[in-house]
Structures are given as C-alpha cells and as structure tokens.
Length: 537
Image (cartoon, one colour):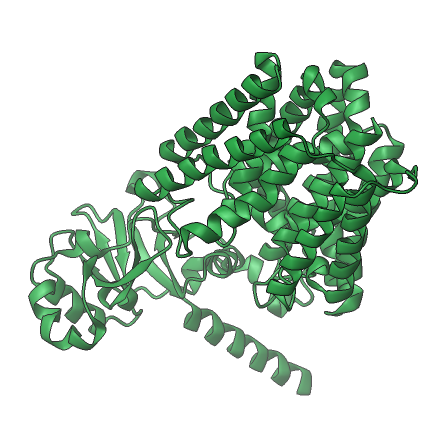
C-alpha cells in the first residue's frame, strides 16, 4: 500500500498548493511543477515513512484551508454542469477501459475521481460546487482511514456520524475559546490547534478523524463568521499562503514525488493525452454553453493549464494495481459524498441550535440594560409610510422622502405586509448576469449608465409600480417579541429597520409599526443617561 500512500500525499499536497495564494504566484507554480518532475527520477534508496503520522499532519491543515470552499459551495449544481461532469467521467473512464484493460466499475470510479479533481481546478477564482470538493475529500479518506472502512463498513458508518458530531461540538467550543483570545497569532494558533485536537480525539475514540476535522472546520468558520470572529470578513489564518509553510510543503511534495518514481510508458502517456483531450472538450463546451463554472474571466488556455496541473498527476501517479479492485475507491467516494451531504444538510440546524444556546446562556449585566425585557411595541415608530402594490414609482419616491422611518411598506388592502421599499431599491445598483460572475448597473432591473440617471429616471420609473421594485423577502418582527430579538435580526441581516406586525393571529399579520436602529440607539442613550443620574444621586 506504500505506493498508494505516496500518491495520496502528493495529490493532497498538490490540491493545497494550487489553492494557496503565495506572494510570488508565478514562481510558486514553477516550483510545484519542478517538484512533480522529480517523480520521473528513480530514488537511490526508498525510505519508509510513518504514513499515519504524515496523514495526521497534512489532512487537518488542508481541510482548514478548504473550509471556505466547502461552506460556500453551490447546491444544487446546474444541470449543464452535471452533464459536463458526467461527460468527463465517461470520457476518462472509457480511455482507461481501453488502455488499461480495467473492469468497467473500476474505470468509471477512477473517472469520477479524476473528473472531480479536474473540476476542482476549473473552479479557482469562481464559485465552488460540491462536484469539485468530492475528489480531494475522497483522497483524504483514502489516506487516513480506508482500512477500517474495508474491514467493517457497518461500523464505519457509525464512526462517520460520530466523528461529524464530535467535530460539530469542538467547532462550537473553539469559536468561544477563540473569542477570548486577542486577534493575531494567539487566535490563529487556537484556530488551527482545535482542528488537530479533534483529529486526534477522533482517532483515539475509533471515530472518523477526517469527518471530525471537516465538521470542526466548517462549524468553526460558519459559526465564527456569524459571531463576528473575523471583523473584516476574511477568514484567518491562511497558513499555506505564508512563505515558510508554502516552501516546506513544496519540499515535502518534491521528496514524496522522488520517492514515488513513475516510469513513463507509452500507455501512461496515451492515458494522459486522452484525459486532457476529454477535459479540454468539456471546458470548451462549458464556455460555449456559458456554464457558471467554466464561463469565467480568464483565458481558455489558463483553465487548461490548471486542469493539467491536477489531472496529469492523478493519471500518472495513481498505482495501477489499486484500479483492479475498485472497492477502496468506491468506499472513499461514498464516505466523501456522505460527509459532504451531511454537512450541507446539518449546517443550518446546527447554527440555529447554537444561536438558541447563546440566547439561553446570555446574561444581562444590569437591570437598566435588560433589553430582553422590553417588547418591540414599546419602542417602535407608530407613524410610517405605506403604499399599495400598484402604486406608481414616482408616487412611491415621494412617500419615501416624506417617511419618518426611511422606508415605505407595501401592504394589501387588509394591511397584510407584502414587501418593503428603501432608498437602495430606487437607486442604481449592480445586477448579476445569469450564470456568470459579471454584473451591470441597473435601475429597476433595467440597464442604465449611472451618469445618465437624471435623464432616464422619470422615464423608467413611470413604467414601474411598487410590486416591481419592492423587496418581497421581508424580515419582520412581532410587536410582542423582545428588542433583543430585533437587534439580533438587524445584526444578522444588516438591516437598518424592521417592519413590526401584530402578534394577534386574528389580525392576519397586520403591520402596526416600524423599528429602526435610531429608535434603539435613542432608547439606549436615554437608559444610560438615567442610570448615570441615578448613580450620582
């Protein structure tokens, strides 16, 4: 199995290095290519290494690096993307079936792994999908824990679930520990340390270490972002981006590649050529069809180069003997799929649970700051502007300018809330072109140059009514709920104001007021002034 472990370490390091952002990207890419070239030089003496310990060193670090991709991945994938992905699987599988005399299941399974790796390369700089995360995660499972999965598949399924649960708990605890540390190296060390800690604990408990580390990272980043752990929105740390760590990773890649030693044969070169040809056709087709994954702002050649840097090593370095028995690869892909799907399904309920725990455990420091005891009805503005869905935009703009709350609520005749209009809805804003990363300035979803706004505002506005421009996905609060609940909603969604509806079910959710940030700040200021006066007396 040593040849397989050599290859897995190389491929995992390669995924991490290609996903990194070093200071000298062009030089770094040449360094990676040079390290891979050492695979064609026979080592003087093979060196046996502690692969379990190396996996424990590499896997958590790479999972931490991939956290943002796993959290931000699109679901579900576009039908065109799925079709192109299947095209790569079938194409590479057919090439291996023809050249290596493999059984059909083994060829298709390896085609799936290769397709995912190729897909991962095309996503750089764009929105990731789960299709590109499956391959690298399967490599991590193969390297770290495929043996127990083969020995007892039923027990390993429980180990996957147990590892995921352990990771979710450690990630939650890790966020609270990190919040108690100052920004910088202490917090960065705690962030990375908790991933290695959960990896080791899961290993000691015979749980899935990869699932534990993966869930710990995902929960830590998602929950930490919601808790404001990174004020600028950039998740830290990024250890592989640092020069010393990146350099050590390249040196390790070169050593493992040299120890692996792949003699070139005509069959291998044919497989590489066919694999690149199939993937190249899929990339070309994706750009023609304007697939969201392939229709990016970089050249076709740059995409093919990135695909080659991941796909060629997969085809060259993968031990041919492993492909004869597809059971290992099938189990790894199943584990990767189960862990990815589990993270997708469980993340939102977990974050809701943690928010509830935070609310239950919150302590009010002083009675005069007991926002939880104050209902929204005691603070909301009872004078607010409303309009019907068929109100013309010019009339809507006048009501907005006269509104004391900075918004106009769009309501039915019964008073039921339908939407909200603010100044941002009546001004130029960026609209996204479908299935691309490009945007264009638009007024009421119609393209317009910002400098031409004075000339076209009335012309475009007169053609629209309130229902055309309102935001129908309204977040509201009941008048009986606490101000602390409203504050949490404002902070979570970035809103300046919230519509308030009647809590009485018989009213059908009738609008009764608007709560604004200014109302809350004014009340807090008055409460603080009263407290200081009482203290002085």
